[in-house]
Amino acid sequence: MKNTIKHFFAVVICVVMLVGALDTVSGQQIHIPSWIKNNAKWWSEGKIADSDFIKGIQYLIQNNIMMVPPVNSTITKENTIPIWVKNNAGWWANGTISDSEFVTGIQYLINSGIIYISPGQNSTTNNPESQCDNFTTPADKETCLQQIEYDTKIKSSIASSTPYVIGPITFYYVGSELLPADDGKSILTIHFVVNDNIGQEITMSCPSQDSCNYALSDGEKEIPYATNTLVYGSLTLIPNTPKFVDWTFYDVIDTTKNYSFFVKEPWGTGSIPLKIQ
Image (cartoon, rainbow, N blue to C red; front, side, top):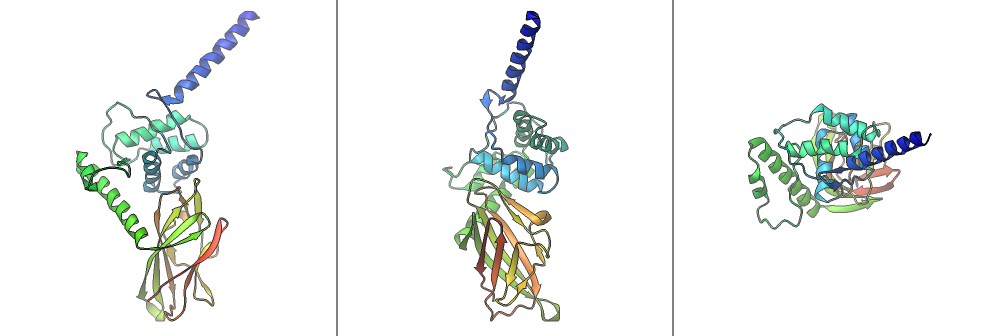
């Protein structure tokens, strides 16, 4: 009996040591906020695009929210995300695999050049594009330049926009475009930058025209959207990671009226006055 008990405790100690070893990579402790699992789950199910998942991981690593220890192995550069990485994300979100196994997939994306981690905001370089010179392949350098261009466009749009705070989200009204269409109607496109100001994810929801938390108002009636850039009817915002969001409306637009963009989310309601010319 005593031998059986000793054997049992020996097994338990071995398991605990193994779990402890899996929770570290390259001798460093892994720290992953639990809310990141939502993104991993949605990405594995195809509810958010590869680019949205990658940008989220980039932000988390750059701002030290998610710690991913480096690896020393050399990995061949790739342009696409292997299916096993997406499978890993889904299994991790469901609790099937450990944090360290999920981080292994993220490390692979970084070392294969699929995820580019740019220097932090305190970088002393005067020419942001010079940081892309370290990449050896044209594809890697182009990805780096595109990320810099996107970040620059976001910052420029925020600087020139009027901010409207609704609940935890700041809507930066960038502007609108009005084009003539058939039957006396017009196509109105409204451009926003949206930013999640709190430390947890917020979802913008608009599954269909009949069930949408956003609408255009002319002061007398609400006009449903024609198209928008919310993927699969929703957009999950990562804290302090601004994104472009466009809305298009097809209706008779009278520029003499005062139009507003309505937000009617569970996390906040409000209206944003629009300048339409």
